[in-house]
Length: 293
Image 1 (cartoon, rainbow, N blue to C red):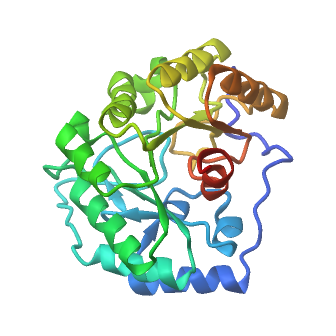
Image 2 (tube, rainbow, N blue to C red):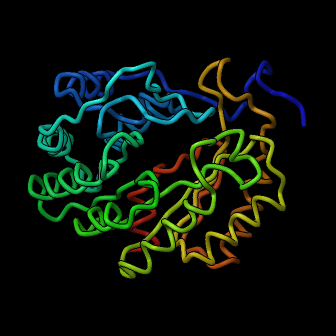
């Protein structure tokens, strides 16, 4: 496969110019000291999603304890120590209420430095948001917590509507892209969610264009279904900077459509597949249309 890092982006890659409402929301988040993965990971959909109050909030700071080669979020450097802002869940709830959000997506950086991996902060955030906006649905996009079931249980005890954990890529590429993660551990996390809380819907995401093959993508889909994953999203990888892992291929629209058909045939409740799709893209719409009956 060709290295596409220096190629012109395909015609489908378009970013909206931020409007006043977008900039206003960004200002409020800055004032409240609340992070979003949209901004930190340089998501191409940021203007569209901010305009429509479809944010993915990121708790536990803006610095990750791992060093995945594809991710634009800041990495811990040297001997720097990370902290936990115990007031963050309350400020997050203020932002959710201010934006009129009825379906909140909450993720975090990975915090291997914390005994519970930050699970307690997840639970606090979910509960604070629910207290501020009664009836709200919350989707929690979690790290692997190093496989600690007690940490997973803390998040599940807060009863999110959906728990997501992203596979990100196929098994063969983990050593290159996610050297501190484990393909089997991530699958096991999704399976354990269903085992511990069968009524909670699960979700995962794959980035394409990293050098994976079609059989590998299909094999990953089958692994996810074996672990009873309900929702799958597939999108085009875009390198956040020249220093990150390079794009190996731009996947065609037709291939994305083929993957959606395959995913549906495998039994996923919902499959969202397209170049600009990200793990939380149209999360509320998927929940309302395919999950909540």
